[in-house]
Length: 391
Image 1 (tube, rainbow, N blue to C red):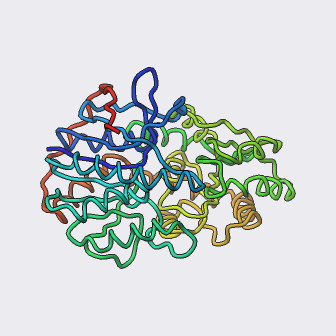
Image 2: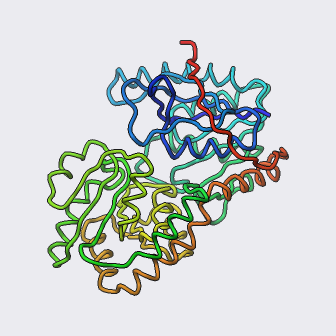
Image 3: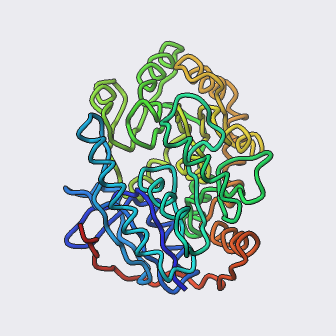
């Protein structure tokens, strides 16, 4: 049984071995336990891989690379159009003989795949994962809204989202996975030993850009110090705002980190800051919760519902530095409240394991698409050679 995945997940070559964005690679390794063969159509970028990139462990996964696209300006836009035509051709070829097509949206390559799928005469069942804000309205790329509209209309398919409330029957909420069993156990041990103390350890994980809220971080730190709090901020990630953040006293910008190094930051942190403009459900929030780190996140998408249901963090209605600083200061003033949220997050983290995710996908594929997948049987360890698509 063959699964074809189409995503914009960036890949690089590291000593001749393809490596990709770590969280997605880990997820695909676990999904591979349900299939005999997995073909991942995704872009291969030039240059060195970030430290957070990982090789595939499953010997069932083959990477089918395409050229990257994107950027601003007319030249980049024209290149994106040409790339989408190429993407469509590759997807059309790869989905022949597939038992299931899995498209990860929103992305340009996802839009190309959906266009091919909706016009194909013969096509496999479709499972689409929309990782952004399913209910978002307003300022966003028009292609995101178009992809949601297409997915809402594909009633014979399965669409998994980060959302709650009334949804079409083929659109189902599924928790975004980020933890395996051993990591969950390590995290719980670290969380039990944690308590609030000076200096307050703040953590930000993600791309260092305005969309993820990195523009507010310097002012949040200054506001907290103005309140007399001793704080330290660790930043795991990279991006255009790295320079200004690095210049702030008490802020350490580590760049992209391999997962063991990121775990060390989770073990020492008290609060995760994520003042994002838009999110689906951020995997870093559930990772932080597992380690007893209390997430303080903008109240967008499903975040307020998840944090209210789990009692594991704070959803801030106003995306501003005073509002985030006030949320942090309130927890510091009420350490018992922080401890309650920390413990609640550790308990709730079990909902975000890969085992739970794979089980949910297996059930939904059977229920919505009528496709029976075998019980997961683990992902064999191996490294696969890269296979490049023809230009």
